[in-house]
Image (cartoon, rainbow, N blue to C red; front, top):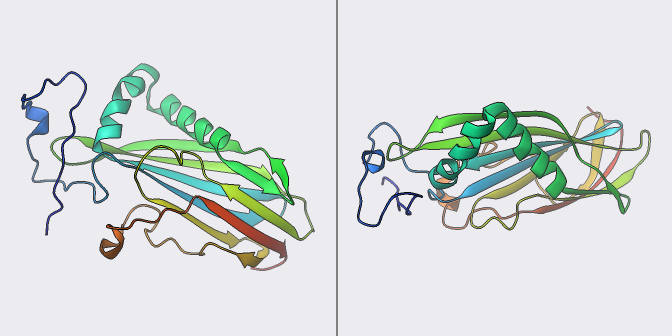
Length: 204
């Protein structure tokens, strides 16, 4: 069954108005988590000397529409860079109990078609934090943007030439990094915002 789209009022649209941009479109379906959600994924990769965090944000139709004035003012490249800087500043990493700063390495955003003539946005950030080389360490991670309202929040972890001795999050993303949301989980979306790992040197 096609998901029902709940249209929330947009800035500048008076109640009862029905602008052309809100007419249903047959070429795209409503966001499966709701057109007001901001959905987040963090893929942690422990590598020698470095923790990589592949941070992804999937903005449904309403937050994507609300971002348009800033995108027009800044341009998509700078808007994505600012969004990734906010993710780095809002995220928290600890290494053996000590805070480690996240740094933005790459940032990218692209528009995707949504429902009712509106667009969605996908933001992809590569963040990194330093790790001591040649040592077994305990890592803690807390995702950014956890107070942004309803949405899917997912964390995975794996090793790159490092071995996960312990982890409380899975290695594989059930949403394929926010590209395919499992239908059976839409009524109770993933809400994982923290991860605890123990990693040791060596591994594929």
